[in-house]
Length: 197
Length: 75
Image (cartoon, rainbow over all chains, first blue to last red; front, side, top):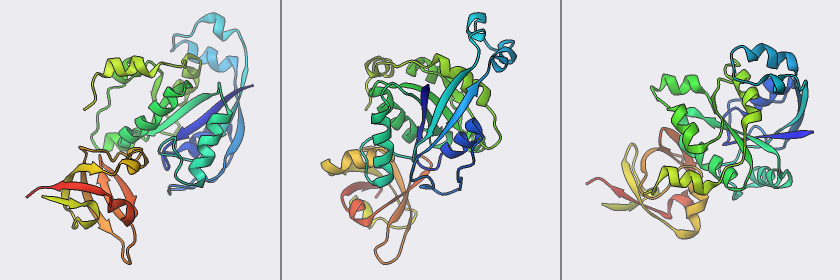
C-alpha cells in the first residue's frame, strides 16, 4: 500500500488534515506540539470520486478506470527542520527516514509561508515526492497576503494546493493531485530561484 | 547600533546581523536568518523565553539562544 506522510511545521493543521482524509478522530487543538507521537490511518480513493471530479479536472480516462486505490496516511509530529531539536521532532525525522519512497504532503501555514517552504525544500532535497498544501488560506487572505500559486508551482515543479482544513476547502484537488507528485531535484529549483542573498 | 537579541526592548525592531555558527541551522527552520527583520514582542519573567516576530509569525526563543544572536538596531 502506498504511504503518505503528513509533514509540516507545528500548529499548521496536520492533524485536521489527517482526520479529514481518514475519518479518524485524533486530538486537534490550537496549540503547537499537540501531536507528539504519530497516528496511522487509511484512505480509499474511489473511482467514483475520480469520475465525479473528472468533469472538472484534467484527469485521463484510463486513470479513472484504474478503480480504487488505498493509501496509508501517517500523521507526523510537527517539525521546523530535518535537524531534530527535541523528542517530537526526532520522531518526525525518524519516520521520514524510515519511509523511503513514501509520498509527503507538506502542510504549510499560508500566512507563515516562508518557514514552511524551508521544511518543504528540505524534504524535496531528500528525494521525496511532495505535494504542497497551503493551509489556512483564509487566514492568509485575512492578512491581505497574496500568494502566486502558479509561480510557486512552476518554480517547485510540484503540485501546490490552497486548502482550508477546518472547512474542507481544497481537499478534492489535494487528493487528485497526489498522483501528480514526483520527486524533483533541488538543483533545478535553485536554478529557477537564482542566487539567494 | 549593535546589540544582542536578548537585550532588545519591547516593540524594538532590528535586523539580524550575525548568528553563532552552530546555532545557525537550529534557528533557520523558524525563519531566523542573517538579514531578517525581527520585532521583539515580549519577554517572559524569571529569565523565561522571549517572543519575536519574524515575517508575521511569532517565535519564542530561549534567552540562552537569543544571547547568541547579534542584531543591528536602528539608531
